[in-house]
Length: 294
Image (cartoon, rainbow, N blue to C red; front, side, top):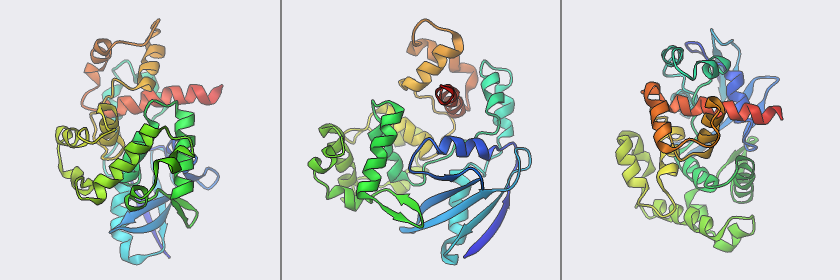
């Protein structure tokens, strides 16, 4: 067992990060001890890292624990990207102080974009979540992972592409996948194991190159590719205009009688660049909080 203490630049509100992570029933979150267990693949080896917050919003620090010393340095580097410890949030916060989102950014001050723990699970989750309300999307994803994935040290790992590619459509329909969604998830996995899609190179591609690569795959459209760019790769300037959650958040923010048009969304978002991904995150967070209060 190894332990490492890490200090990062504030503001960073890990309690709000844990709050958002906890919306996903697969996440192993402990609010009392301010910890989360993080399942990672390092050099294709599954490992579990525990992250514990010990600081506050303005002076955030963390205790990181793992078992294998061999993967320690690579695991820490991955965690820095996953939890957005590698880039200070102050510039983002300052940017939004003079915008229409200032109140939302103040309410959720220090909330970082937290990435999905690996590229494959991110894409699979995006496909599962397509055209579903958030609650059932999480339920369906949980069924998928707990039926075909595996647990290690209390953390859940998604099934590997090799495992998923061997599944039959009927097996996914048995847990309430639609036939088409089952085809998409199995087809994506086949593309990966056959070498037609290499997710490991995505980090080196531009946003447009990633989009062009992914939308060639059956079942992946612009919304899914944008969400992969945002929550898989952590790209800073994504604003999925087709996302129902963002549309609903804008409707509430501006008191609109109906959801905004694409043109209206474009107009609202002009001043939010080059941090559109953060605008997206905080808009989502604003309606998640409303849901929690009901």
